[in-house]
Length: 118
Length: 112
Image (cartoon, chains in turn brown, blue):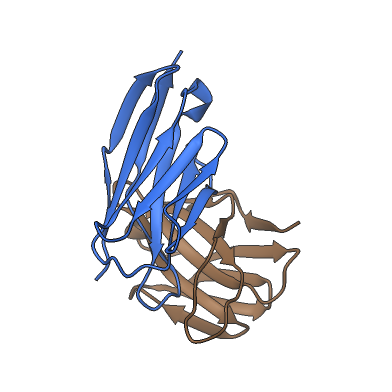
């Protein structure tokens, strides 16, 4: 069966410090991978998605970046955190779809990382 | 641009009551619609996925319906239990079919 891991579970960082959140998926190959942020009162916001190693698409301009160094590893980073980066960060995966249209299909989420920027 | 709205934002019911959560979307050209459950401080758990060709899906006490033409979906929970207390989110794929667009959720509280 497939599992998705995220770490750390919680993080408190000062403004201006760097960030690295990691997500790994087990039990599947060639997944689509996603980073979402959930801020209070704002719902889930897609930050990045990836359809393969080294292939990253950004949905929202910000001071965050993402990388996919391996097929089942997705990393969210920042060089300098802002107060507005606080939130609950969720990684997700879905089976890769091919063909004329890319269907997201069912999406599976990790346990999340609670980030507080002080 | 696709927008997803969920009403009500919060709902409190006594145990045993049947209830309906609503989800509406502005662009009816969707491939599927997914309902999730989120417990406080936790990730999302997929409950039901309805393909565009389907009108409903059932899993245990949960039944989700989809009416593409009117841009609506409902999640019906039968005989609610305190363990059903959570936030319920609905989501549809974006136009490119690359990721999901979520509603803000309905927070359900079931009292014993």
